Image 1 (tube, one colour):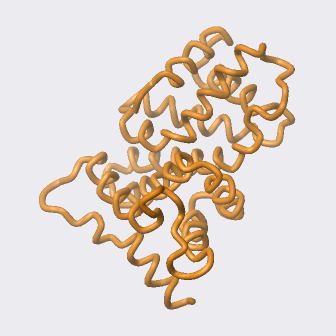
Image 2 (cartoon, rainbow, N blue to C red):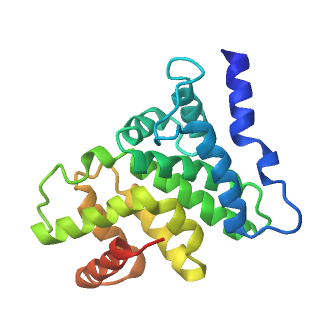
Length: 219
């Protein structure tokens, strides 16, 4: 099993996935690495493969997450396998982190790393989203914030790599602020609204407008 594990991880996360003539853009680099990762972990139907033995790919994916969310990787993968879109995004998130390790612009690399780490942790909380009645938000506000949260879980890695400059910085700050609130007794939708208000220094009304734009965006 140890040998199989090493071979599997080499295939999935080899630096050769970055090999290409000329200088690659961040998106090109992520896309190339993402393709390798998707093909390794997912079957044609978008399910996590188990071709190498019972739950082998699940263990490989957990191992890949240990430098993103140490100690939380099992719960994150457990949540992700319940939804194909979230699972695909989680695998993309691991690709973003590996791509960040190869990017020369260290400020960009840091943002991509922080964003991918934060998105992985958000997936670890997905089982709470929409399950608890908010004491701070109306039903309409809860629906909006929860939809924005779900968009981040399903398209977060694409948003992270396609947003540029101040937009990406703001996005990463929201993710980090959201995760910093974990365990504070509030619902995910409340924490997401608060995270936008804090990082963007805006009112609740404006924060909800920002979340609506995020909910409606197509990355």
